[in-house]
Image (tube, rainbow, N blue to C red):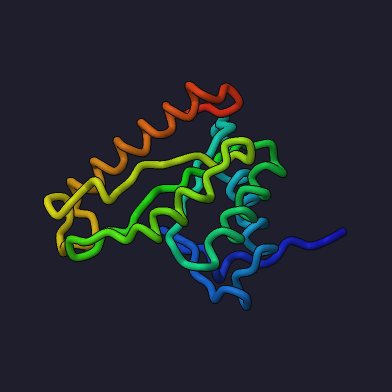
Length: 159
């Protein structure tokens, strides 16, 4: 029987911290997804989780592994790819194209909102979202989830 990795050094009260490829591997990420399902999602009677990530190169493999761990436990875990390239009043078309290029609803990867639409008025430093920007982003993400749900009955915008 395979033992589950010790996750206590990685999981903090607000996030997961590790060194990719050393303490944070796809195997560990899968275990985190399974542990989250066992400890948080399923005891509350829920069956759905949305996974988010930042733009680091390690993100796709780790988010896939977390999703696999959740799905191993019977939790539905669609992935929503948000578009985000805005910095100092400019956007980057190549980044936006790469982000939209990985959307594949048949694989459970759906289009999230384009945060570039939230210009400087919703940013505290012309890059990062302010509290108002975060609220607007959350509303945009819910709208994306509901739009995906209306097109694909195999997912649900859980509440």
